[in-house]
Image 1: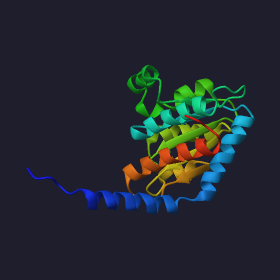
Image 2 (image 1 turned 45 degrees about the vertical axis):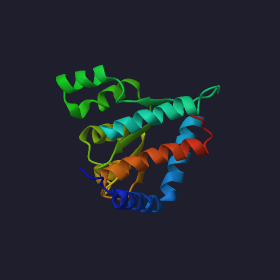
Image 3 (image 1 turned 90 degrees about the vertical axis):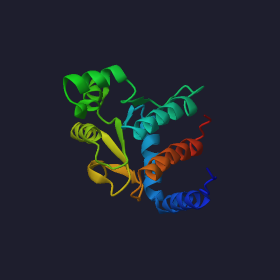
Length: 190
């Protein structure tokens, strides 16, 4: 079997990635950073969640903020990933509904004024939407990270960063870029 030349496909992917980076609203990213810093300065909790690749991104955000931006400091970020407790998630999924795997644990820990960040490439993950909706009803500050047309998450969240492309992989790539951009600018060393 002969070798395949993947270079044109690689170039196309990288080109789409670069073009999408340039299309992200810097105002939205700046606003997100200020909201995160307000939460930090006011000792608010920051809840974050997602499904699939977005779940991995949510976990990565928590690692980078709780260790990278907080280690060795008296004042620390307080990020909690709602998709990291598999037994609790599976108990709610099995006994109640998969739509409740984030909102029910959120109810245990949430305080008025806390941040709730939902990550959904499509913007339409029902369990993320349900948690955002509940947080809105209970005086939370909600943030949506989405792609495609933003879906319900973009509409329901008080704030957000929208990745303007109809491509799940590039959307997920750029959600991670947001994490690394933010922690690098805020002085994190992961």
